[in-house]
Amino acid sequence: MRQWMIAAALLPLLGGTALAQETVKIGYIDPLSGGGASVGEVGFKTFQFLAEELNAKGGILGKKVEIVPFDNKTNPQESLIQAQKAIDSGVRYITQGNGSSVAGALTDFVTKYNERNPGKEILYFNYAAVDPVLTNAKCSFWHFRWDANSDIKMEALTNYMKSAPDIKKLYLINQDYSFGESVRSAAKTMLKAKRPDIQIVGDELHPLLKITDFAPYVAKIKASGADSVITGNWGQDFALLLKASADAGLKVNWYTYYAGGTGGPTAIKQANLNHQVYQIAEGIPNLGNASADAFEKALRAKYDFSLFYPRAVNQMRMFAAAAEKAKSLDPAKVAAALEGLQFDVFDGGKGTMRKDDHQFFQPMYIASFGDRTEKEPFDEEKTGWGWRQAAKIEPEQTMLPTTCKMERPN
Image 1: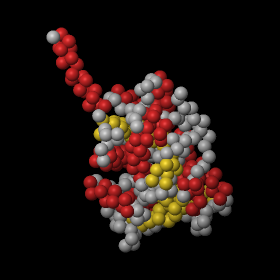
Image 2 (image 1 turned 180 degrees about the vertical axis):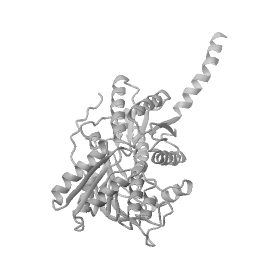
Image 3 (image 1 turned 120 degrees about the vertical axis):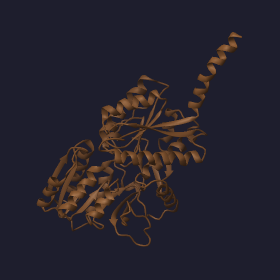
C-alpha cells in the first residue's frame, strides 16, 4: 500500500516531466519593449509562424516546437538575466538577433554555462547579429550564425558600388556600438581598395535607439554635398533617419543593410526615393521563387507584415534537419550535425554552415525599393512600392577568411 501511495504521489511529477520532454522550447531573447520593440515583435511572430510550419509537419523528431519570448530591451545585461530565466524554464535552445553587443554577451554566457554544466548544454542560434568578431576572435562551438556578417555584406555592397560611377562623395552614418563601428571601418577599408576616388565627406556615429529627431544629422549630410550614404541603421533608427531626410528634402542614394525593417519602406516612399535606396540581404520578395512566394503569401495572410528574415526560415528548417541527422535533440549532437551542413535555402540555391567558424554562407542579393512591374507582385507596408533585384552574389564570392580557433567539447 505504501509503495502504491508513493507511486501515486509521483505520477503528477512524472507526467509534468514527460510533457516537458514532448516540447522543443526555443527561447526568443530580443526586444519586446523600448526602442527595438517594433523589430522584436516582428521577429517573434515570424518565429511563431515557423514553429507552426514545423508542427504542421510533425514537429522536430515528433516533438512540438514552442517559441518562448523573453524581453531583453536590447540590453546585454538584461539579456543574461533572461537567458538564465530561459534555462530555468527548461529551454535548451535560444535565439537572438537584434544587437551585436547582446550577441557577444550571450555567446560568452552560453560558452561558460556549458563549461560548468556538462550534459546540460544549451545552444545559441544567431539570426541577425552581424559583428564579424562573433565568428572570428569570439567564435564559439555553441554559437551558429545564419545572417551574413557585416564584413561579408560590405564586401558584396562595395563590389556593387565600385561599378557605380555616379558615386563621388559618400557620407557614413551608423549606430554607436560594435556593429555600427564594423560597418564604418569595413566601408572605409574596402572602398579605399576598390574606389579610392570616392571622397568620404562625413563619418558619424550616434547613440543606439535613442535619437528621436535626426534633423541635425541630416543637416550635416546635406551640407557635406554627399551624393550617397552608407548606413547600417536598423529599426526606428533607420525609419526616423529617412523621415528627417524627407522633411529636409535630401535626395541622395542610400546603401543599407536593413532598409526593409519595420517602418523603413514607408519612410522611403514618403521621401519619394524611387529606387534610390538599396539593401544587401539574403533574400527579398519578388525574386520569383515559387515556394518562397507561397510562404510569403501565407505569412502576409496571417500577419500585417512581410518576411524580413529569410535567414530565420533557414535557421529553423536547418535545426530540424540537423536534429533528424543526429537522431537527437541533445544540443551537442545537434551542433555537431550542423557543422558543414548544406541546405536548400529559402529563396533558392545552396547554403553551407562553415565548420571552421559556424558562419552560414548563401546567395546574397542587392535590391532597390520603388515602383513595381507586373512581375513584382509584392509591395511593402501598403506603399504600393516593392523590392527589385539589382544584383545577385553567389556564396563563393562572399567567403571571407576567418580567424576563428574553434574549441570543441571532448
